[in-house]
Length: 143
Image 1 (cartoon, helix red, strand yellow):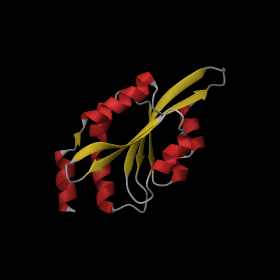
Image 2 (cartoon, rainbow, N blue to C red):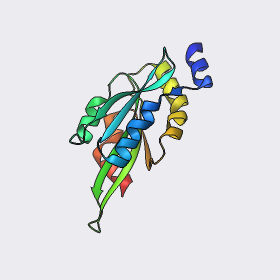
Image 3 (cartoon, one colour):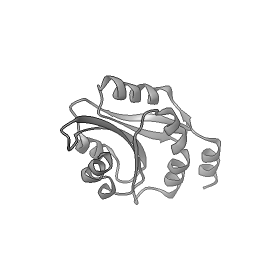
Image 4 (cartoon, helix red, strand yellow):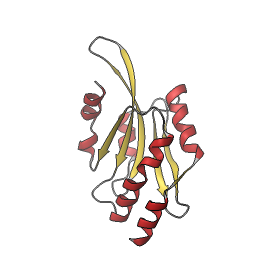
């Protein structure tokens, strides 16, 4: 536990690839989502998985492990009640109940470092199971 506290208080190094993939998703729309993980050995936030343009929300949910924490950003496209096409970017802090306590602490305390790099996120969702980040929850927050 002391190691997790030390790493959390010193902060995580966010790799440049994290921002690069996010900007490609945001501006070029070549990715639908990016999943990030913390490598405890190198004390860095890394890209874990990138969702292609044809992948949707179901693929993002499937990419999140059931026993470990992750961060994710998702480009959510929707149509408003005024029949207007919109897009909102969600930041998801995934911390399932089955994950290690050390991982939960590490991800919770390192979140702001990654968020500072990801300029343009509209909404944040914290989830411990899939019901807390269901499609209806995301859609409700976007409108």
